[in-house]
Picture (cartoon, rainbow, N blue to C red):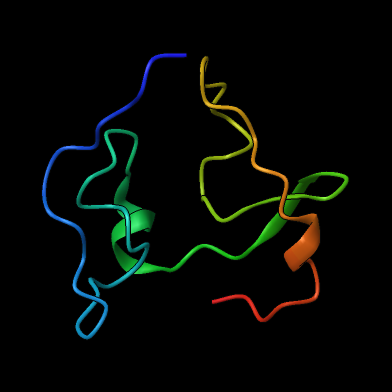
Length: 76
């Protein structure tokens, strides 16, 4: 699998951007990404995503990450 490199700088955790922390580096970001943080959603059993556009994007080569071990952990 080819590795994906995101352009730009990683957000400062002490002063994160408004909205989704990834919006400055995401080529799929839209207006709501800049103003509102996305909620965690269960995309498939045991697979969670925090993205406003998760339901409409099908990204080849971007496998879902199994977050089952952290299922009951606090979510941002």
